[in-house]
Length: 446
Image (tube, rainbow, N blue to C red; front, side, top):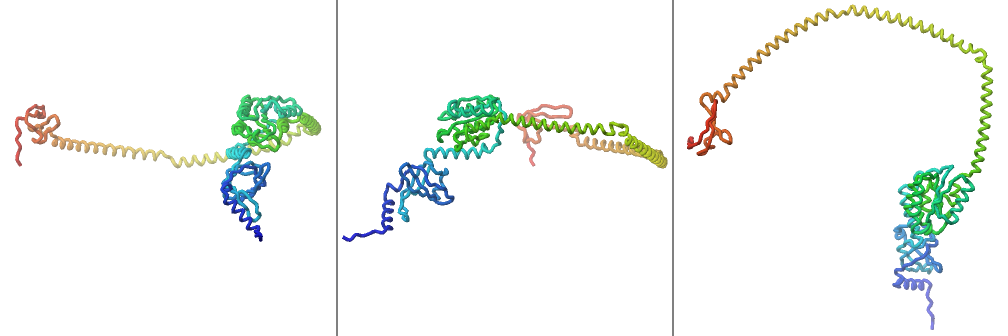
């Protein structure tokens, strides 16, 4: 029987067909760790997903990658959803990822990045930092009372600056209640108010162990504290939110202790050097002052002090002479101006103008009085005419000739149509009124 040999392409296409038709491979839920991940901007992403015993190639097209809400990193544990495909060119099977989210430590890393971005936008990271006190008297240490961290801090401070007082605030640095305890002790130390520096410290550990120092309440407590805070959490490569918010970050607890206090031996040496420099400068200054004193004592001013005033006396005489000359010239000029003004005043004597103005004023007064009398007489005549005209139009004059007017409760009766039989009416005369009753009504036909 003759065997039929397949080409590699045909075999690969057959296997690919099997993969694509398998219902179990159309939607695969996979968990693992990112490997060989190098982010390529605005492009498809090629990497691997592995666990302890196996590894699978993965591809994520740029459209699906752009929808991610976090930034994938090498070694991050992830949960992915995708389909199994075969890449014909190499005959290698792979997973085409449609959705990916962090898992385990990856979820914490995403939360860390989100919190970092949130607080950074609020300005907690870039706010002005409080300077450390160079020579602190009291230092508050927020850390666990047991372990190498507190021993390193105590040993370093005692070695470098033994006159500083360390006050330990026993604190939970791990677990679900750690964040609240850290915040409480930071606020307690800050409320006491007599600490120059505060150290918040913890030893190394996993991201889960260090997580209390990534909590928002801890970051805000550090930011709100009035006391300068040094953060020393984890190893040198570990970075927490507390490190970004603190005034100073130290890589290790020993480094935190070194940053919080100066080296007393070095400071004493500096003081001695300054003392030596001060004494040297003082001696130099004293020598210069003595030289100036000797030079001044040899000056002619002290030997013949009257020479100091000779030039001033000459200058005073010159000034006095100039002053007298100027005063004489000024007085002469003022006298001449006074004489000229006197002559001008005599030429312009106002008495005649005053007399003429007085006469004109008297004449105007007489004209005003005559005009007022004429105006008053004219007004009286006009008033009399007006009163006469009003008297002629007065209804009282008409009533004196025997006329009257009729009223009822509603007012004046103008027409017989306003009356009714047996209606009570009032007839008004100039000297009184009469009450009457309507017996009958007769209308005048037009």
